[in-house]
Image (cartoon, rainbow, N blue to C red; front, top):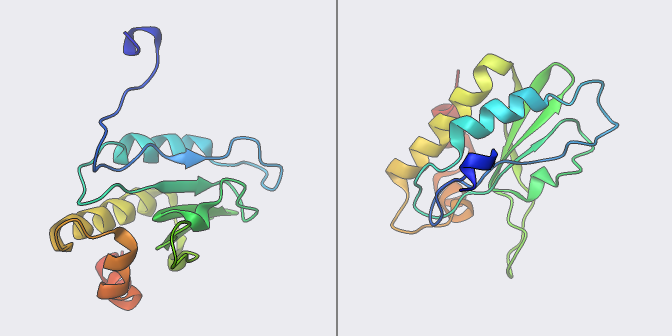
Length: 147
């Protein structure tokens, strides 16, 4: 019924969650929401070892709190930067680290999908994404998603 009235319905459980994005930012001339929509269509609902929260910010102001998400994209003028490992809850909270910067629109979705697929293939059981990042190291993941 929800789909009939134009709402999108995605799977629940251990999947990538719908993209969390801001749509009101004054910090960028163009927030790139069309790119955010393409990214959401590409990633929402992919089965993963644990739920993944993915964020998008149209500029460096980050009003959608991208650095607190498992994976996030921040638009920097005409390029994109991908961050990983944000953890807003628990005793070991952390801010996401930069994984790749200077990505073009065409490079962005393949980088995110390769990261998700690498997580799916190499996570230990129901390993949380932040623990996976710490175990694998940011340097290894930078090689995995090299374009």
